[in-house]
Length: 172
Image (tube, rainbow, N blue to C red; front, side):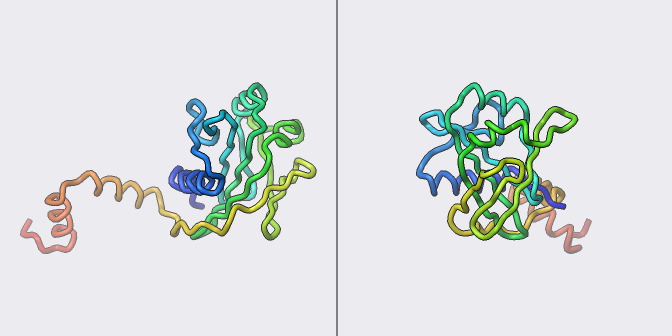
């Protein structure tokens, strides 16, 4: 199963910024925890599955911040991403209702019906779909991503030589 990766997350963050007219930056070293210029929290979660995890650190940090933040959950499909957003506070307030993992993190399950997403563990928490589905192209395997990164580092001459070798045209 392909993973929701940092490229996907970047696309979701860009779309959230565009849609909500704000610029987001990371809080500390968190990938999923961002904030706008006023310090309001944005949790950007995503995946192919219908469950999502948050670390207990993120939860504790948000409990201290209490910024009345925004929860963004992206559902990745083969070539599109549906993005939903809503209030973060109900999730924070009801964290005891979330599944607690052995590593001390929290998980919750989502269900999508039309343009809304509900969080099964938190009664009455509904996220609304942000605009249309985002076209993202087909998921890429880690091997292809790695090969692409290697090719990107090569000079044009090195790439030409490699292509000649691969096509069997070089004399050795």
